[in-house]
Image: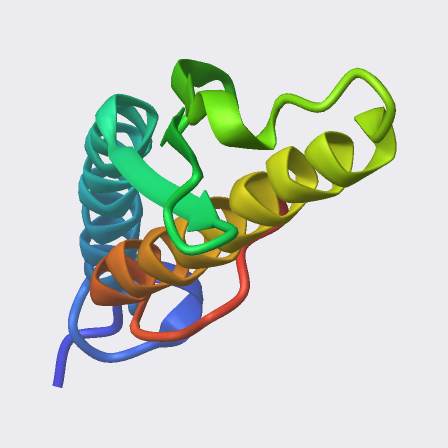
Length: 115
């Protein structure tokens, strides 16, 4: 049997596997970049107060639309309106996080990535 790299049979001694691993890592990196772009383009609706406050949250965590029913605009109770906006945002954000995680897990197989 011919001796290969560092005395291992097969010539490259596993270096071919390293090339495969690098190619797979590069493919996964490209897929992750594509998913991150898709996530930024997501638009998730959130609402509160029986749909009296509705908003659209982007995958970049920016609010792209906000609708407030006139009946919840009470100058003497600004705190209630703030609570409704916060609740609508949090609802949309929770859904966005779940969707983002689902999309990333399709690429990573559930392995946590360092970002």
